[in-house]
Image (cartoon, rainbow, N blue to C red; front, side, top):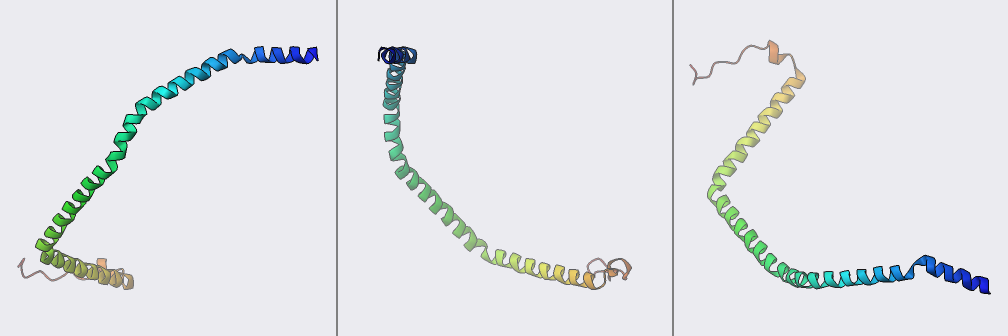
Length: 119
């Protein structure tokens, strides 16, 4: 029994409980100080989402309004551009299909007629 008590006593001394206790108290004090500093920051952070959402929503509305006005002003031009792009795309498809059927035509065919504008 005495051996067991001696062993336990040595284990307690080896564990350096006094140092562990001091470290724990120090850590607890640091956490308290951190909590004091974080408290005001967290209170401010809780008010940010409402203000931020209002700003973002207003900004999104303004952008959307500007986009709608721009679209309304230029819709005929935009539609004409889209129509021209569709014609251009169809011409490329036709050219591609033609070249698939006869690839040599790009090199061996006769040159195109001169444009009336150039003449």
